[in-house]
Length: 337
Ligand code: ADP
Ligand code: MG
Image (cartoon, rainbow, N blue to C red; front, top):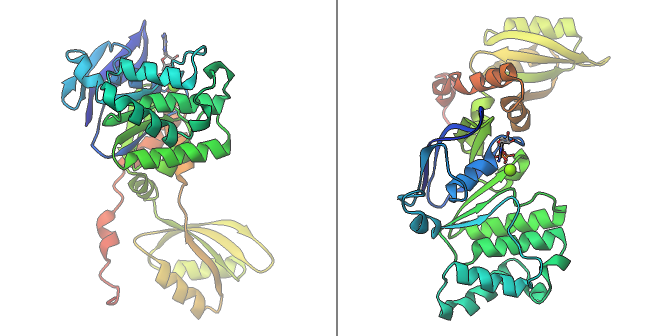
């Protein structure tokens, strides 16, 4: 477990990390999400003991990173944004060197080296000089170095940046594999990246905490403003007449029309879907589409982390708004299942 408490990193007047607190529990695949400059690398560098914080505390498995740096760092494997590779070493030489630095017992080194080379698909490259490797392979060497020693917690700073799509998939698979026995923390500025592998996501912006949740709950919270997109085979006036009859409909907006159909955004109190279905059927205006209208997580992420403080605050307010969750459990008028 890692506990980050009230972390601050200040450069002059600029807060790279601004009173950030969060906890990563054992076994999580924890995604650190924020646009460039949000403070991801700075936070990771502090968590791993590479950088001193201005204020605040980091506890790794209960060890304070400042007071017991050795004990804390022994629990962590880290792939920094720019991996500290030695271009004049071969892959194998470099990894042996890292194994020594990490004080992996001599009788385990050979075995671990082979395991790590296999996991990162580097077996055929082990005799190559690092300087002659492509970006993708170098990234794998950095990963191999982080995994060596099989520490409890593996921290990867933007592990897929600059890789081609096939390599990205390989890294994702590797992260999932590692997550079976390790806690994995990874950062990205791309939401889809985090969503593909993480079970928890922390969004930060300008060094500050925005939200921390599972991707599913985040999506749910953000889709709370319940509205529907309704398309009916009817003229707009005809459809409007039907919409006005349904008590659960609190408002509507015409989104578009074709010669045959009209498409509306329909705002509702509770769940108006069934009532809409029957009302349109009775008016002999077939419903051709009825679906929840949600802001995609992507849209919300972009708003949440918008450079403009007003836009970001509005998006964040959505997260705090009560989502009327009680009503979702049952409105009292549903039949038995
Ligand atoms: P991210 O990894 O999310 O892109 P960083 O942690 O690298 O963000 O940077 C956070 C902020 O701190 C940025 O505004 C960056 O310019 C600033 N910063 C990072 N390192 C330094 C430094 N050594 N000196 C001054 N400012 C820095
Ligand atoms: Mg970074």
